Image (cartoon, rainbow, N blue to C red; front, side, top):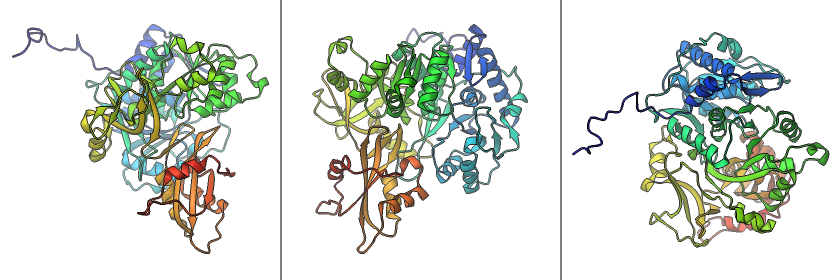
Length: 548
């Protein structure tokens, strides 16, 4: 029987609306129309102007036949069109597929086909790889290709489409009705994993999760109104950890950046009064290790967020010397980016740098609006003791978890077994409830914030005619966090060199996946012939890096 509180109390448009981050830009334009929203070179746009362009983009897409459930792919750096894509595409009901600009043509072609993209927006910097990808597509459905022009780009230009982006946007209606989805479970974005065996998996985000993670970013960082956010983190990576929507919610400034270089970052921080930025360890390390003259005159108190490999003591110390405040987060593509944070205790500030680094290296506790994050025994599905020693698997449940994998019900069912999202990352939980990763069950290598499947690299190595056996493990790297280290057992009489192996890999892999070290010799194996990777990990640290 219904509760008395459910009787005659209907859910209507007057008292209920679906959660969507698309509401954030609408409010920013209404409340702060004249405040700066986008900075890119000499370009400046207010929130009113940005909102108008997003409405025009949505209108132009709709007039091109794009609607609910269609996929619009973009191959863009952190430029204004990428900011606009995060609002103008999903408000039509379509799904934004931000492609990883570091991938090879074969992988991109698979993504375009698998996601059934109907529109592709391309920056000229990536025209060459995209031209190859388009030629490799197996789908025969027509694809509307739109070319972007950018005054900040100085390289060669090749047309792939029949219309330029600004021309396309100008053809849209500036009064396009900004309608939020009726169902917050509707898909808003499609992001592909890069750390899997075989083809990448398509991770589907919903409006509710995107809105909630965007708000959690505000809560975790105590993000004030009108922050100045520098785009060092690629917006193709988990939709920039949902920060395009976070910045809109706070009516901040999107400082765009084509190239992630120390000089460009430090100049932007000084010139625009940057208050916040995110990135993999390599970005922060780049700033710490920049020449002293390049770091002169930096403002103090800049907030920096790091994910990927845990920040070492040298990085924490270096950031403190810069006057920057570093916070460590953890997550996966399947959790919209960050879903835990190593929330700092004030008492930690009294500790020496080594102890602070140890505490800050942990993956931490759940994000504000994530329902739960635990280390669980995958066999019993019970939480492990909080003793800092008992290993289990990190699992999540709640709103900051994907809808599932596109066209892959088996993988979706497996990863949600027992009512939890299984990360595959092995960890312990400390008495204070903080999580710490100890190993990666799938041998994923995190290099510069990108996931690399060791199995994928091994498959390529085995395609070399002289390779008898191969194994790939992570090699610690000061700049990238980790890089692939290949251990290769050659066939009898083979004279293949490390340079030959690298050249072979370059033909089949994206650059960041190519091994940075190659070690020849007989591989350690169990009695059943299984390669003992734990032994190779011990050797990887001392393996000589080679120029790739």
